[in-house]
Length: 470
Ligand code: HEM
Image (cartoon, helix red, strand yellow):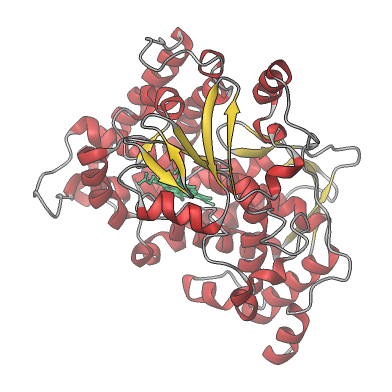
């Protein structure tokens, strides 16, 4: 098939695009008790139909007043123009993650955040992908071998398998291919426990107790965090011991990094905290987005056929490399559409450091400002057929139809995802490697419901059946 034939095929959307599931939307705002029980079960089910039309609104998330920026201009104002006022993460987020990440980049602010960002961002920057891409493809090919070894129609949990794959990749990237592989299972188990424990929204927080009131962590959370610290310290020591013939890895770079402004190195605790940040931020997000992609493909035969046509044309059965990524335009469009519909981080929250005003509304110091990709990405005035799966909207020739800052799966502004290039490259290479050999079908009777814990997941698992393509 020539490139022109392929372009003709991929630029036309399917005649009947798939309408994937989303939680029921109340017609009117929920009362306090209903809101509390809904928020505990699934945060996304709180938003009534009208929230997908408003440009801004303020709401009480139960007892807390929250200002929602729900239009491209207000997103840009809060996260870019007024970044200094809205740099701080919410008390809820800081409370949930401090035992795990300490003063790590993801939840710090002020000078600590700025210094860590200067050190960590270059280590995961787009220009470093040539180091990580072979690891991504190698781990994806091993996953394809595992699926290939299963009889036709074998049930699998696609969410769990994608979590295993992205954990393998991030562990090998952080600790080096050998050490990362040896310790991946141990790290995943330790983080899994922690994330399960903090995944539920904090009831005291929802009830609106003031932030200054001490809110101790449960012994189980403290134990889980201690275990992670021990595991990471152990691997970091091993990494140091083996440093003579050492592999290039993120941890090696963190050891050697100096703040370009002050010349300071990271101390041992800071180094461990940043390793924990990279693992936490870079593992479940990509896993969820790949799981959603498999689900959407399984329900959209036209899209899947176009994906297969592109993979055949660009790769012809071989493994992908970093150089192929720019050529896999339809594969990228599928991934971008999957994270439009199911943004792995569906809510970005900040606390105002000082009083500000957006669209003539006063936002008092200490109040919360949120951008909700879940709402913005399905906004009725920003997207045609906002709830439908239409990857073609992300093809380069359709880019001009999209308003800037209407699509923020990686956030925007100075706190934008530091690992955006890593996540995108990883998703495209994994999908291209796996989809050449395997298709997945939804298991009969499986019910798929988007649920927001710390990240947006297809419930507790995604039961699918393996279908071999070759
Ligand atoms: C599909 C994959 C990914 C998505 C959708 C995603 C999304 C995000 C979002 C929305 C934020 C901002 C959160 C907030 O403001 O509350 C963020 C922050 C961050 N992400 Fe990602 N991420 C992905 C993959 C990765 C990967 C692979 C890495 C590392 C290799 C990574 C590292 C980080 C870091 C370090 C931050 C904190 C940045 C800061 O606060 O300055 N992410 N990510």
